[in-house]
Length: 91
Image (cartoon, rainbow, N blue to C red; front, side, top):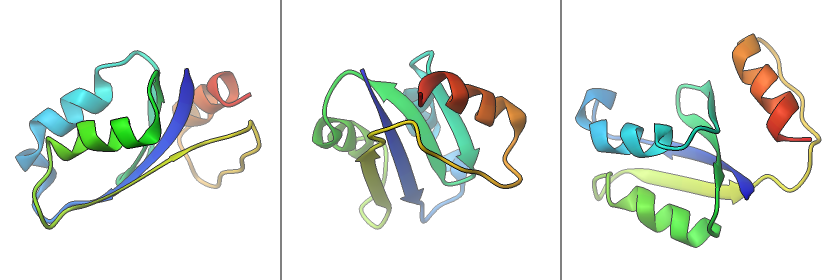
């Protein structure tokens, strides 16, 4: 299972995307370090993940998906729940 970083720019308020956020939270292994960024563990490649996310956004929205290849990371002012998740899932 790979860890992916997902960054998005949504054109509408978050409340317009309940299915997107349900999908992102559907796995047990996820963290949200910033309002427009998620890290999730996913069994398939980045293209499949992107395609799954595209089902839940509108035409003008933007999505960026990339695998996080190693456990090297640094943060500043990120919630401890997120950095704890990173310590477990990015090493």
